[in-house]
Image (cartoon, rainbow, N blue to C red; front, side):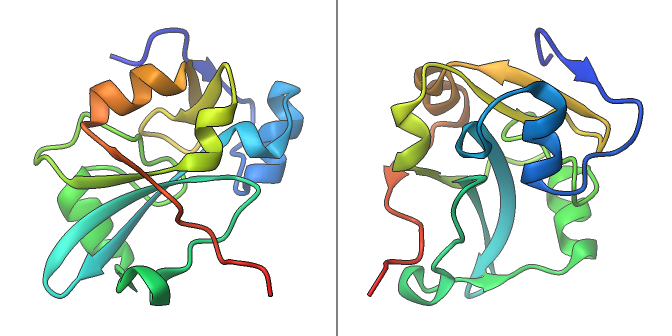
Length: 135
């Protein structure tokens, strides 16, 4: 399902660790994060270099249990697509500046490469400015 997946010897718990293991800049790492808008789960695909401005987006962080319930995957390895239910997905516009990005493949030890245009297509995502704005 996730073509070109790479398995790490040890889990990469942060975007920085994943970037170092792959040999790419941290901005090319996709953080697949689940939030809630009211009662509705929303997937935010955020560049590893950014933090989500959940307040500006009207989102609250989902619990680990909810993440597993809606994605079937554990935090730290959530893939951007392939979940039991289709989630509204916001894609960090900063990811679109890369030729290739790396996303979780459903396991904290696995990632896969994908072109941002394919990430948008496969997730049905909407490009958005999701990062905290600088002052």
